[in-house]
Length: 169
Image 1 (cartoon, rainbow, N blue to C red):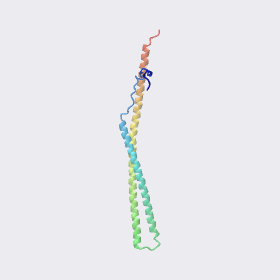
Image 2: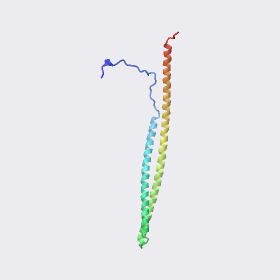
Image 3: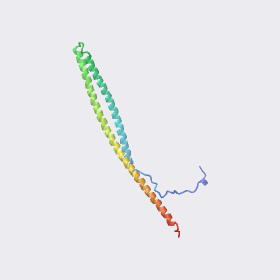
Image 4: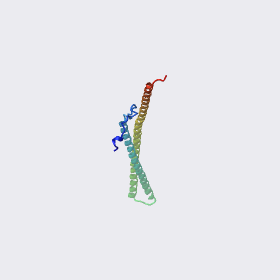
């Protein structure tokens, strides 16, 4: 710590007439809630996209199983097979087709969910951006008002200085 004697007298701020209050956006809490909602919507969209991707892979796998079942039933056409073998091959093909249809329904449901989540994200982004625009406008208005107040204060100081000077004749 420096010795007391080295400290000069307390100086007054030369800007004491100028307002130094900081800008405060009154809807900052609402904006942060909307930002959080946007983050949740983005997370929901990411999860829906992941589910959609997984169900699309499952559909592709089901398509391959159907093709394999059809190929297996065609391979045995040239050779004599028993009725039980034909029924088993037909049953396997039908089971693979049903599984493929179920996978296709899941893909359609997941795609619908992705679109719903994407719409929710767009809405959340729009709501937050509206508040960001409002904040920008209010900040610009605040800065204009502060500049006007500063110019007014400086004009008053200049006018007071001219009043004090003696008029030279």
